[in-house]
Image (cartoon, rainbow, N blue to C red):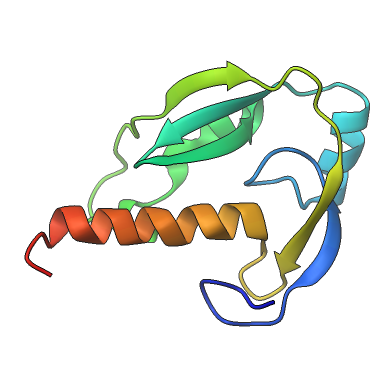
Amino acid sequence: MHCPICSSHLDSLKVAPCFDCGHDPSELDECEKGEHEYHVFSIWGQEIVLCDFCDADFGSYYPDYFGLPAGPLPDYPLELLRKVETPTNAEDLHCTKCRHRLAFLDFLYKARANNFKIINPAA
């Protein structure tokens, strides 16, 4: 399988529930120790699981990263759907070039496609 963003080969990796930082080895330990809460959010028609740190830090992504017009950091419309009641580590694929797990890369790909359609409705 290949990365939906850069087409690089993906490697299997143990991950924590967070789509954003779950590939980081320290997050695996923190998940096992119960140091974070995880929630499912909805944004741009997609669901994303974020830990409490990445939820608070989500606004640090520049808009153009998500396919939005460049500009100041916005207040992203994350809609809380539910808490992950029993967070556990699992397996996912990981792109060493993009430095994210497949769950985040799929979210990013779909978010960019969605935002492109909003910005360019005639395309």
